[in-house]
Amino acid sequence: MSSEAQATPKAAPKGGLVAYLQLDGAVEAAKFYEKAFGAELAAMHPPDEQGRTMHVHLYVNGSSLMLADFYPEHGQPKLAPQGFSLAYMASDIHKEFQRAVDAGCTVTMPVQQMFWGDLYGQLKDPYGVDWALNQPVD
Image 1 (cartoon, rainbow, N blue to C red):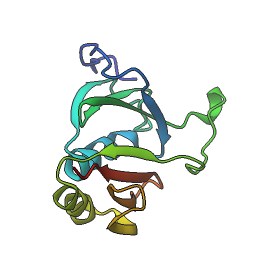
Image 2: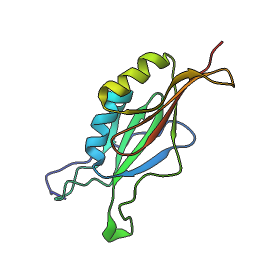
Image 3: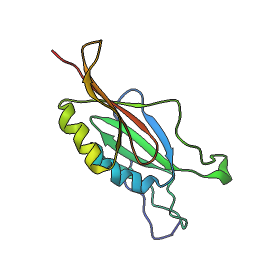
Image 4: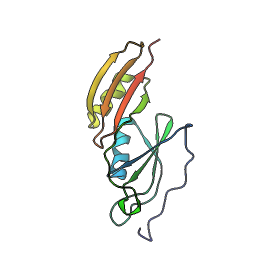
């Protein structure tokens, strides 16, 4: 890391369970999540000489989401996301879903009313992460 680069102040995590994603391009992913999901940057360690960062902390929809780049030399090899989705509890699902699509997410399941009664749709972001948007119907 550059000796001039400074880490942003530490930020308190929000939520009782925080997802920590390893992505190829965590800084760019954070910028994407700002556009797609209204994320706010809470804290970030500056990128190293290769452009990788070991920590980005975002606030997304009232919760924390942590990101880091892959560091194969430290036992964190590059792997595609698999076997999970991030559940985003929407207050205006059609607007929030469209914002994510307009930012670059791919629709994998359009928003529809589900058998359990809620509105629900699924997206995949450009980093391979699946997002499940859910809005209770009163």
